[in-house]
Each structure stands twice: as C-alpha cells, then as structure tokens.
Amino acid sequence: MCGIVGYCGYRSAAEVLLSGLKRLEYRGYDSAGIGLGDGKSLDVYKTKGKIKDLREHVPQEASGIIGIGHTRWATHGGVTDINAHPHMDTDKKIAVVHNGIIENYMPLKEMLIGEGYKFISETDSEVLIHLISKFYTGDLEKAVKEALMLVKGTYGIIAFHKDNPDQLVGARNGSPLVLGIGEDEMFLASDVSALVAYTKRVVYFEDHEVVTISKTDYSTSNIDNEAINKEVENISWELEEMEKGGYDFFMLKEIHEQSQSVPRAYQGRIDEEMATAKLGGLNMTSRELLDVERVKIVAAGTSYHAGLVAALQMESMARIPCSVELASEFRYRNPVVEKNTLYFALSQSGETIDTLYAMREIQRKGGRCLGVCNVVGSTIPRESDGGVYLHSGPEIAVASTKAFTSQITALYLFTLNMARMRDLSTEGGLRFIKALKELPIQLEKALGDSEHIQALAKKYAKYPHFLFLGRGINYPVALEGALKLKEVSYIHAEGYSAAEIKHGPIALINEETPSLFLVADDHLKEKVISNMKEIKARDGMVIAVAVEGDKEVAGIADDVIYVPRVDPAFNPFVMSIPLQLFSYYCAIELGRDVDQPRNLAKSVTVE
Ligand code: AGP
Image (cartoon, rainbow, N blue to C red; front, side, top):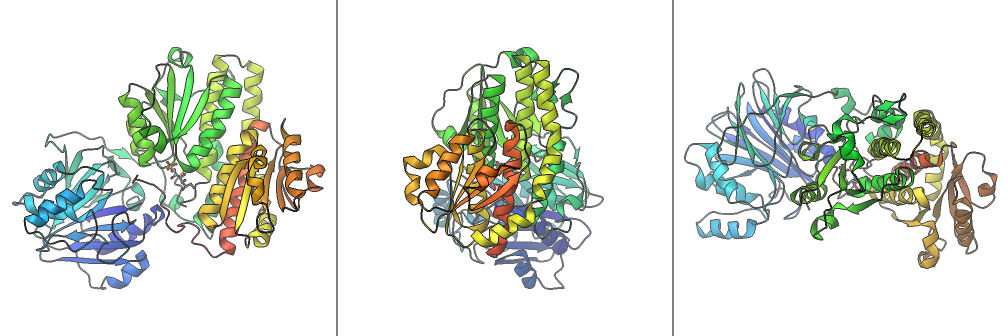
C-alpha cells in the first residue's frame, strides 16, 4: 500500500525523505517520488521502480529544507513515472502526495477539466492537487480543507507550497497519518517506522483531522475547521527492531522471532493464582463478559486464518459459539448485529480497510467490537471499543508469520478467561497455562529443523501446484500454509480440509501436485492417515508434518517433517513453523522478492 512522508526542519529534506520511504518499502509499492522546496523552487523527482531507482534520479546537490515523499501501490493508472507521486499543480507551485482512493474522482476531474485544469496522469490522486490549487488564495490549510470537502473516498495526504518552505499540511480519512515531533524539525508519515530514527514523540490522527506543521510548531483541527487537542504519545520500540538482525530477509527473522514474540503476547496477562488470564484492555466488566453469548471475528488473510484457529478453541474450551467472517464480505452483506454478541476485529497492521470498515459497520449497528492488533496507535485499535495489542514488535515482511501465532495467543488468553468464568476448572486452567508456557521451547525445537526443511524446499520448489491438507484445529493451519506458499513463492497452492479432498480436489492429484498433510496426534489422526492413503493410492506425492516419533506416518509419506509433541490445542503453533519455513525456502529457491512479493502490500488500505 502507498506510503507517505513529509519533513520540515534543518536537515537535507531529500535524505530524510528517501530514508523514510525506504522504511516504508515493506508496505509494498511499484514507484516512488519526492518533492523538495527551499522557498525559491519546488523540485519533484519521481520514477517507477524502487527507492534505489529514485535515488539515481535525485541530484547530489538537491537542496530543500522541506519536502514530501511517496511510495505508490498502483490502483488507478499504470506503473509509470507520470503516475508516480508527488503531483503538482499546473503552475508547479503546490505539491501533494496521497495514500488512498478518491472514489468520486471522475466527476471531479470532469468538473476541473471543464474549468480549464490540465491533467497529465491517469491517477485519481491528481484531482487533489488541482482542487487545492483551485481553492488556494494564500492559505494552504484552508485550500486543503475546502478541497477535501468535495472528496469521497479515503486519503492520507501531505501538501506544501513552493513559497512557504516552513509549512506542511496533512490530513487523513481512512488512511493512516502520524506526526513526529523533533527538535526544530517535524515529520509526517503513514506510520512511525518512517520517523522513529529521528523521534519517538508522535501524534496519531483520526479520520477528518488536519495538521499543519512548521519546523518548530504544529496545529491540529478537523475538516470543519474546529481546533482539536491531540495527545502526544511515545513509541515503545527501538529502531533496531526495524533491522534484519543478521538475517537475509525480514521474513526469516520474524519466523525465528516467534519463540520470543509468542511469550510477549502472554507476558503479564496470566493469573496463575486464579488459573486464568487477565486482559486489561477489553474495557469490559466480568458481568459484561458473562453476558457474552456468542463471539464473531472479522479479519482478512492470515488474520482470518488465525481467527479460525481461535474460534475452534473458544467453542471447544469456553463453550461459546464463535464464528469468523472475511471482513470484506461481512461489511456488505447487511449483517445482523446481535446484542449479546462480542465482535473482534483481527488485524496485524490495524489499518486493513476491509477490517476497519467491518468494525465500523458493527459499531454503527450498536455492536461492541474489540481490536486485536500489533501496530500501536493504528486506526483499528484507536476506534475499537477496547482490545489487545500483540506486542510482537514490527512485522516488516509482507508475509505475516509472527503475528499469526501471536494473534492466536491473544485470543487463547481471552478464551481461557471466558472458559474459567464458565465451566473450566482450576486444574483445567492450570493445564492450559502450563502448555502455553511450554510453547517457546517447543517453537525453538520446531525452528531447529530449518536445514531439513530447506532441503525439502529445494526438492519440491519445482512443482507448480500444492495441496495443503489438515483437519480440525489444523485445517485453518493448512489454509494458512497454502497462503504463505502462494504469496512468497508464487506457486499455486490450495488449503483444504483433509476430509474434503474426496469430494473433488483428489481429481487434481498427479505427478505435478504434491500434497502436504498436517498429521497431529489428536482424535482425528487416523482419519488424516486414511486421507493420506487415498492420495498415495493414486500415486500422489505426500509430505507430512507429524509429531516427533510417529513411525506410522513415516511409513506412508514420501517425506516427513517432525514437530514436538504438544497439547493438541497448540499444534497450530508448532505446525505453522515448518509451513512458514517451507514457503520461505521455496521462495529463496525460486529467487523471489521474499519480503516484498510482487503485487502485495503489507497493509491493504484500499478495497
Ligand atoms: C498475510 O501474509 C498477508 N500479508 C495478508 O493476507 C494479510 O494477512 C492481510 O492483508 C491482513 O492484514 P492485517 O492482519 O494487517 O489486517
């Protein structure tokens, strides 16, 4: 998704912007640009490609104490230099960058063309600069507000005027915007990763809010021109968490971090004495929690799969009906929002627009929606009725890995709390807590099999199709494994319930389509074994992820990846590790852009 950065201060604006955009690369993009000002000139440099290509376009002597930058993930208009941002008005006096979609850009464009404005790009965003120019009579903030009054859609924008090298105007609706407060310098960006190198003092903005900054001050108001007060917050994590830490790719680093990120999700949240969990951020009394008769989760992608795992455990352990819906479908089906149903919006980035709007739909209909997110200060946790942060640390790779296991952890804690308020005994609660606390060691053991998994990736990466098959609580893990392989290696992969293959997918079995089975030592094991044999009987290749010491599986599968034996509720954790590593190493084998796979974005802020 697009990234935006703005700077005014004493440093070289070009360097601050380029390094800021570099830290936003993980969001996914296909072109980039910066605009620089020094009070005399306004220079824009932009190109399709990556930040390194943009750097080649920016002259060494590029001056500028103010500027804006943009990484573009194309929505309207091809990947071309002209369509890259910043966009300038015809007189080249104002520049703007935009993250989001202007849904009514066509009628606005027709109106502006009718008034003589000349468009040069194919983008929706270009209407913004001509609207701002149309309303500009010397007050940029005023012109921005008047322009945005006409806009329908989502935006995170930053604009500046050539004649004022000490003023940036930013505004948001649906796309994130954050202010960084420095000493004699100020920053604006899509997320804190672009500014954390310079300051940890930040201000997060809500929809329809506007901020005007100079290098020493800032003012905040809403689109209706009413002044508003905003709280200054402090970023809790360090810059080095944004670095690869010696790994070749962020994805590998984040896979290996899970033996630390999972405990970070439960630390301080377990009450051993009462054999339960305590989640302060729910903003719900015990009585309100006791009134909950049903739980519904809305999410997208990997978060959706994490929700599916948690929902099965919640229903089984807390005896609360729990279902999960794709946020994008939920939002538009005119859902019934019920009184005693508690909703969760599950989102690593906290910015996924499908999930954000699903939450807003729930709240509009009077439902209570909690957020389970990783990025502190992102939109979903700021607008939710409460919730739980994952504390995973920044997840940079587009392919979500540590967030997946941390989301399940957070929802397992909620499940434990609800179960202990209902039928789960103290002994049951303590058993669950013990199994949870043993996870970090089990995850480390699963991660220790990397070399073997890398060898399997070398063997199987040449196949064009894969089936991922699991049952029960491991069925969503099969879905997640298929998504991982698809998104980082570009190999076609489908996740299915192992029982389901005989209802159609088994027709796909041939010498080009390996099947990867998750064989847990739970109540469904024998069923999964039968499903494996159905594949083998048709000369299908089978890779099995099985529990250490399981000789039966070894006698059936072509290759076996063993994982530590854990309480069945925790198989999704240890079985995810080999699937994540397998996808990673297949992507490496195929020479893919592992951290930023083609066409993908880390935070999908457009529908
Ligand atoms: C997962 O690897 C993908 N990057 C994608 O499916 C992602 O999970 C989805 O876009 C949801 O993102 P969120 O958790 O930030 O809402």
